[in-house]
Image (cartoon, rainbow, N blue to C red):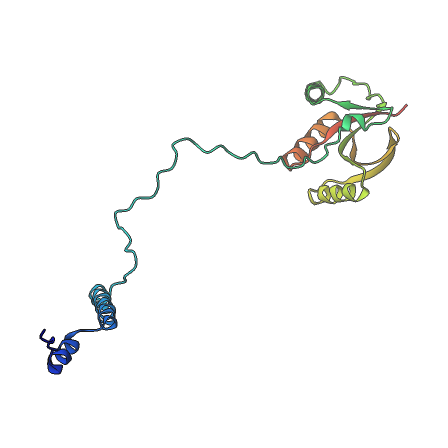
Amino acid sequence: MAAKRSKPRSQARRGNESRIPGWAWLLAGVLLGLAIAAFVLLREGWDGRATGPVPDPQAKPPQTSAEPAVPVAQPEPPKRPRYDFYTLLREKETAISDRELADRARAEAAAAEAAAAAPATTQTPPPAASLESLQLQAGAFRDAGDAEALKARLALMGQIARVQSDTINGSVWHRVRLGPYSSLREVEAVKRELTGNGVDAIAVRESTQ
């Protein structure tokens, strides 16, 4: 039996040299991927534009609901204490309502006009002494400083006021008073002036008996 012939050494060496190792293919693939990525980046950023998201000029703001928003309830501001001047009077004092004051002031004006138009020979009896004192009360406060502040405010209006401290219903109140006046016409005129300057006042009739 004839012995097998072995390949020549030159042919075996050439077969081994023609085979490329696997790591070389892996390296070539990585380099090729990096080259493609660099090409894409250079192409997109070649003209200097940002590679981030580009805003759409035709974009519209989101549509809001057509239903009106329900207003949030705001807490009410604390109310300042308002004192009832009618309950802060002494036993011999009574308040004169605005209607009564206007009616009596008109009656006094009519009587004065009639007296002026009467003949000089007609003897008119002297007016009887009034048994009441007519005043205006512009405020009543527990704090004496508040009463003094209102008194100073009235002085700037040209009105002379005084502060009376009285115990009413078991509490000490400092009342700001103007007067006394000789007629209800004068009371009404001063009251109208105070109202025009933002000061509320009431007419008070005080018995002198």
